[in-house]
Length: 374
Image (tube, rainbow, N blue to C red; front, side):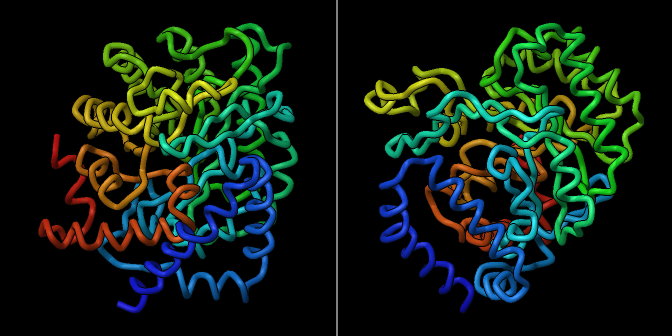
């Protein structure tokens, strides 16, 4: 009861005071300040333990072991927020059960021309146009080489966003070099995410075509990766296209998929048309991805739920959103946008809600709820 009370107070303070203040400033400015603050707070055992005491919980009904990895709870930070590995020590204090660094590329990239982030408050969405901004795989691996993470932290890898990489062969070679570097590093990442679905990159290289995806996965998995591999899927493909991709993925040693990424469609009914009029280049996260994410999770679970672990990502703002994805077939949940709109207490708020929903439906552990609505 005490923890629920604390979480509700933090929620009210964030929605009533802190969010209105933070939303006065540009999105990318706030993002950079948040990363810096999180790195400082996470580096101190005193501050991280104090925040953990306020915001984090643990309960047997939320624990899982997936691909040999122990997850204390199913809520993770998605790729795209911590693109330079500043937050792995802060995430458990905020109640996350896992997180992802990146997306990281073989070579550094300073980001697409600004503005790279924007808020659509009425639409509960972020306009994202970073284009895999990151310091490059070498820098990230050196930064994390001597670290020890308390929770599973995945490493998201993608193609360097460079006009010099114009061919499928060149893109595969670039990605392969990043994986080779990761495999030879002592950095304690628990798993890999291969991001093939970011729509904010330059050039015409793509891995949606089955032949192109097969070439990529054949090359990457030939490394005999020492850690589980998850594929970050697009959110706006037809079921037949997703099915063709899944047919390729399930013929390779891939452990799971993430559904999915940001959305391109500016006519999405979840978007406020007046807000869209003012949007520059970029694509949309949050509520506009929710419906497609749910539908594709259900489809993928029906097709290959026994073969692949599904991580649900897209439009998670509450325990009900997370639980719906779990019952549609997701074993784990990732979010970013909900954190921005709802506050830093959201992971624990969701976990508390999941405990209540599982108990209501007579489940001892969330694994029993996976796919129940399929």
